[in-house]
Image (cartoon, rainbow, N blue to C red; front, side, top):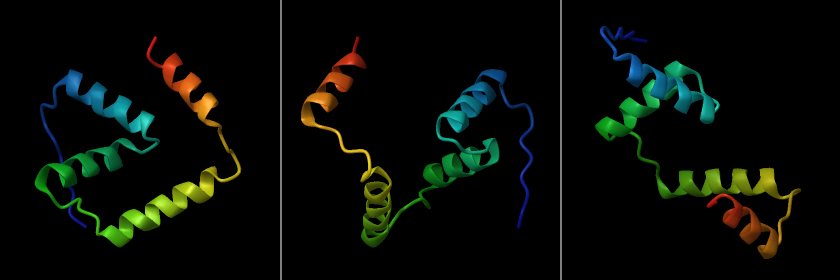
Length: 80
């Protein structure tokens, strides 16, 4: 698999990428690859792939139900 070295990367951009990788629980390398894929348009999922991802997420959260009131309270708290 090819390797890419990026020279003279601005410190601010590096910190943003690093922060984003942490938020998304990815390695910095994986985050950069995803950014490049999105930038060049190769990160397109087929409808079946979106459905599969949605089903996986639903299965992960099935044991943690939340009511509409709890959801709205949490949503409002995030806006303060």
